[in-house]
Structures are given as C-alpha cells and as structure tokens.
Image 1: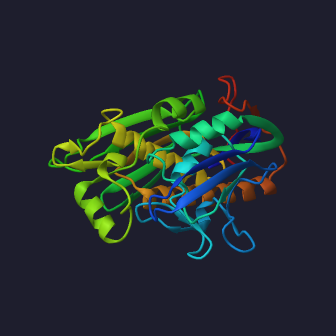
Image 2: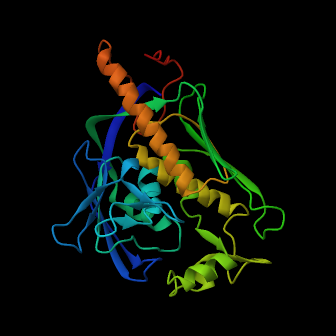
Length: 318
C-alpha cells in the first residue's frame, strides 16, 4: 500500500438517537451517535455496563465473524456492528462515539437505512485533522472455501469501487447476481443503505433453534424459501448482492483509513471481508514505517466528499 493523499476528517454536527430491537437477543436497544474529537475514529461504548467500556472499531479488535462481525470481548464487546459501521463509513463520518445500552445495535429492518437517516439528520462538520488515503501498489487477493476477495489498483479518477458477485449455486432460490457501485456518500445512501440482510429458510430455522431471532417473523426479515422471499418482497432484484456490498463496506471500515482501489468479491462473507481489512491494516502500518524513515513530504488534501483531482499524480512507492 502507498499513501496517495489526504482529506479532512469529519464528525457529526449534533447527536442522533436510534431505538429498536436487537436481531440476536430481541432486547430493546437505544443507540446514540455522538460527535467525537479528531483522530478518535469510530468507537463503541457500552453504557449498560460499569465503567462504560469502549471498543474501537478496528480490524485487530474483531473477535467473531460467524454470520456477523463482533468486536471486543464476550463481556464488554458489541456484535452485529457491520450495519452501523457501513452507515458511518458510507457517509464518510470518521470520528464518532457510538453509545449502546446492549451488546448489539437495533436491528431495524435489517438494513442501514435507519442509521443513515439519523446521521443525515444530525449533519456533519469538517475537522482540521487529515485522514489518509491509501492505494494498493499491487493486487491483494485472499481466498477461502471457494470464496475470493481482492483489492486492485485503479487508474484516475482515484476513488473506491466495489463489485460483489453472489452465487449460491444452480439450485438456490437466490439467483446468481452481481452488483457494482462507487463508494461515495450519495451512491451509498441511494443504492445500498436500504438493502436488507437475508438468509435461506433452512438457515432461519437453524438460527431460531439456537435462540437467535425467535422474536422475528418472515415478514420482518428477508427469508428465501423455494419460491423466493417468504411474506415479503424484494426492494431490488439484486437486493441480496447489494446487501453484501453493505456488509463489505461496514467490515472494511475496520481498516481505519480510506482505501482507493477496486474491491472485487465473489461469495465473500464477514470472515474474508475482515481478513482483507486486517491485511490492509498491516500493509498500511508497514507503509507508514517506510514513510517515517523517508524525508517528510506533504500529501494532497482531498475534498471531504470527493476524490483526487485528475491532475494529481500518485507518489511513488517508497
């Protein structure tokens, strides 16, 4: 990875509150998005516990990726964080304190739309500190169990693009589908944020047996039976692939930096998404170590909601 520029960090202009019921436990949850000082990053705070323990949203703090992303310890951590993180990262909110009075955020309708609406109502403000943008100098490719995820260098205009191919096989009620989008606040809010989590009917039955989601009905989740969604309707023909992009954006927020490149995923889930975030985090740390040993140079300030201008030439890798 090489650092190719910067943009000014952003936080919220005001606090915002979201209430709902957790998908995993069925408990009522209050979540508060609060402005945070520059360089804070995204931090989850458990207000229901003594001493209000905090867990930074970073790849090296991930402790679980089984059907959802979990941060921190079983006693003080937070699970199913990907939809909240997707909303924050999708809107380019870099510093935020996320307070929860439970071990999971509100499930809402299984999408990030409710979080995006709350964040947009609070508004954002620029901060003096800079957030770096990194680009891969060569492809980073990870594979596991027939799934693949990669990030490739892209030519100008510099930015981030995500492509996801969902493929459950020829006999699945969910057809093979691919969705591609630029990762910008506008595209995220319009095309991705409202796309819901989904599962197959036999998966839903197995989870209910484990005590997960027993309070939910098929009309409250996107459950696919042999003939398609049960007691529900798709918001897009490719809604499942779009939701996979939502999850991926949330998981890659754990890098803690902006990534410029084309992220291409085939059948990837949380485990592989987080593995890529961890790989990027490691390469960024090595790139920063090289930069510290090299003569100091100024980066390019990027607009808060834009990409590098066409005239910008990338710095050569150290």
